[in-house]
Image 1: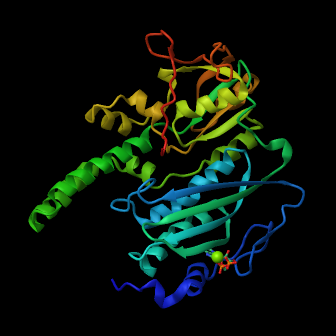
Image 2 (image 1 turned 30 degrees about the horizontal axis):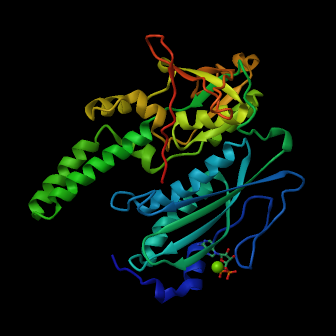
Length: 361
Ligand code: ADP
Ligand code: MG
């Protein structure tokens, strides 16, 4: 495939090329790309803003992450944050730092993913910034959303006896990453030998991934749970606290419990886990419960809701009750941090939850 150097289009040519034909669909988008700033009007609603950085070498490895998936994921993870506030995502901006090894075609691939996500989540791409970078690809996406003040759900609203729920399943994205990393190591160790071996490896890798497509998809192309936000609204349920699971369930429970000043009991046998995840964890000698609690990048929703909503909650698809909120107990040396976040294992003896979530530092 021919590769077009970005210098051939120039900065403005590239921006025009990437954003041509985009048509805003949100009524709140008054003016989109093309001036010094976009103009938005949320008409009496609250505006929500979130931003996420994705850095090559820290958040993604282009040796196995397709650029198109990366573009989709960069949008999805931001949309997920707006959903976690029980709000509707409306616009995004995309900032890019592009190093010399990328051609126009690479960035096109990335934008094909961005555009697909914008279409899927019905958000308008209304601006961004594009610049050369010294090394690697840097992606900064900002997402805006809207909600009525009364509908916004914060992390601090959980109260004792509330039910604790998660959507989808946990640990799959982490296991998908482990699989990709393992195969990359194998690939690196055989790559330089000879071509025949590389072909052999290609076949072997295909076999290794077979039956595990779901785990790869969870890692490479996660979806934000807009569907759950809509289902909750339809069922007349407003969670008392909510956040998305990006750093791992334990870590997110710590955030909700600390900010809500409550404790929690989580039941091991209630954690939703996919069978492909169970099988791979076993093969890799990983504890599947640890993966589910601390894996991260699931982009599912974790929320608490009033126990009186139980009847409305049960019929909802893909929502699992994993425990309940308890009154906080504090230890004198840590007056800020509730000490009673507990995991109830199958044998029934409560264990303290530890937050070993993902941390770039
Ligand atoms: P400025 O000089 O004010 O930073 P730019 O020349 O960087 O403006 O951008 C021109 C227009 O193109 C603006 O509307 C900006 O938001 C938009 N834009 C720049 N980069 C991107 C991008 N990667 N994706 C989408 N829109 C972009
Ligand atoms: Mg600019």
